[in-house]
Length: 163
Image 1 (cartoon, rainbow, N blue to C red):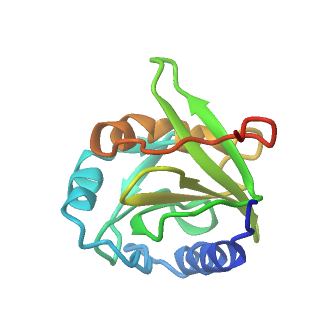
Image 2: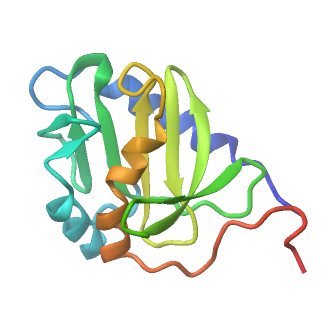
């Protein structure tokens, strides 16, 4: 049976709110496992642009951000990996065939995408104002760095897929 993960969505709302207070450096709480060496590789390898927004400095280890003010997209590496959930899990594939499974949660003012089946887990908060028509484009922009640094051990399944 799948179990809901409400604390994840609540924590994400705090991440999104924290980005709005930034002025120059984006203030972002780090994930519990941000010290994982893989997170350094993820942050270093993260693109200079996401959704056409320029990368900006962040305050915490294992984080990256793009944009400013209410339009800030935030990535945190080393968040608690999600377990089984009733939240929407979707596989996003970029134009080069890179596929990543993401748990998608609505948060205040946007969406939170959290990698599923990968450790360290990575989340990406996307305010609706930054991508009103396709918020998943931010997760797609990060697919290559996620795939290059983490390996999938489990995948999204639907109710009819369980054995």
